[in-house]
Amino acid sequence: MVVGICAVAGTIIATVSSSNTVADIVGQAMIIVVLFGGLHYGRKGAAISFVIATGFYAIFAFSARGSIGVGTATQIFILRTVVFAVVAIVAGELNVRLKYLFIKLEHHDYVDDITSLYNAKYLSKLIEKYISEFNRYGSKFSLTSFTVSDEMLAPMKKKARLKLIKDLGNSVIRGNIRGADEAARLDNTRFTVLFPNTNYDGATCASLRVKSKIAGYLAKHGLDAEDDGLIETEIIEYPRDKDAIELMAVNLQDNHPKEKSR
Image (cartoon, rainbow, N blue to C red; front, side, top):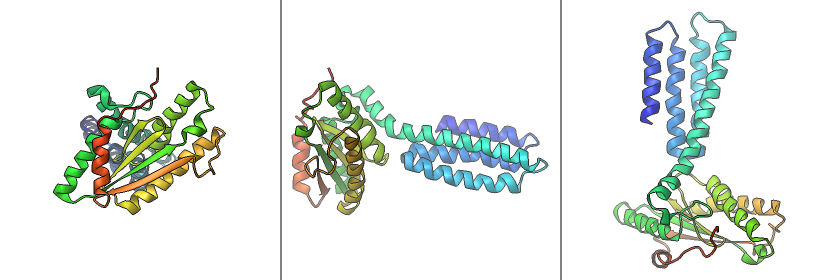
């Protein structure tokens, strides 16, 4: 963020000292909006900030274009729109991936080797962290477990099975939750998502979306997505399910994925 702000600020200063129009300044400033939206709020924030930045810039691009013609203004507008899109995409992806990467670099034993999601040990620490935040601020949180049937995947070869597990965690689940949500692989085909500041109803809505994406992915691999036993989900909320979540945090401390990538 500091590098992005300095770069944009420097360009704005250069623009002010030249004969460029106000639209150029606004266009540069909108890069910060898109960058912040993606880095702070993830993919969805990147998309929303891109739309806002593009719309706001369009007002100045065509109403305060100075002495340039409509054709030139249109070309500049298209170019800046492409810049907004690239910044939004990169920032959104960084938001989703960097926090897992930083944990992996600092504490390798906190990250699952196959999916690069958090593992059971780190999820336990996260649960304790959010319990502490509830005690201080009263902010609820929820947990949803997604378990794909082992029996359904048993006929698959090990390499194909590991790829499926990796794609489920790395692309399907992580790609369909908010940047603030925490995803972990506990063991085999069991995943858990922690939804901060989310009650049971909110977690249910988010979980249904994720479950449908998992089912769609499994259907592409020839599995019967209509089978009720293919994907099991369990949703619990703190403090409603206080005892169950606190027990879960304790049990996860000694829990490790049983299937390794080697």
